[in-house]
Length: 144
Image (cartoon, rainbow, N blue to C red; front, side):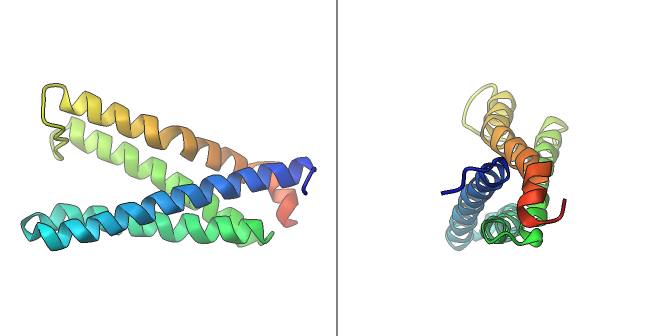
C-alpha cells in the first residue's frame, strides 16, 4: 500500500483520469448508437463522438500509465482533463451565443444544460488537472 504523499496524489489523479476516461468512452458508445439510430443528426453527433473519443484516448492511457509511474501518463492526465475543461467551456459558449442548441425540453434549457455540464465536468476535471500537475505527482513519476 502506498503511504507517501507522492503516491496518494498520483493515485488520486490516475483514478479520476480513469473514471473520466470511462465516462467519455460510454459517451462515445452512446454517440455511435445515436448515429446509427438517427442518421439525420450525424453532423452534431459525429462531432460529439469525435470529442468523446479524443478525451477518452487521453484520459484512459494517461491514468494507466500514471499508475505504472510513467511520465507520459502524467502528461495524458493533464492533457485530457484540460481538453475536457476546454470542450465543456466551448460548448457552453457556443450554446450561449446561439450557435449550438441545448434542448432539455422546457424553459431555461441553456441555464439548466450549462449548469449541469459545469457541475458534472468542472470539479473532477479541475481536480484531475491539479493533482496530475502537482509536484508530488511529478516526483511519483521521477520527473521532479
